[in-house]
Image 1 (tube, rainbow, N blue to C red):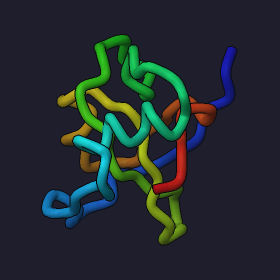
Image 2: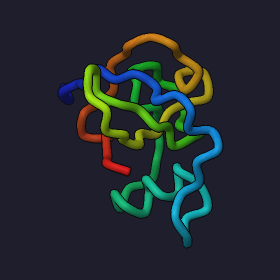
Image 3: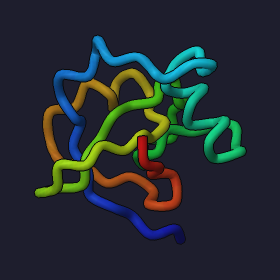
Amino acid sequence: MAESQMVAIFKLTSQKHPPLPYLNWLDFWEKKTGHKAGRCAHHCKRNAEVGAHVQYMHRYFEYIVPLCGKCCERNDEFAVYKTLVRPE
């Protein structure tokens, strides 16, 4: 089983846009990793819909992970597959 990392949604990023030529943050994640986003990086089994900004607990750095819409709205700490966490 893949290793997990505890993260939280990085707030105040809704107005942030990815650099050109990326269409959105999920596109950014897919092109940077060379993988197609499939399932949500959390263990919920839903399809990934967005590239969400997250941070490791107690660290300021932002990372992008593919999440479903429901998990993107979380206000708590939650686990994601560590292999899917990529720097912005």
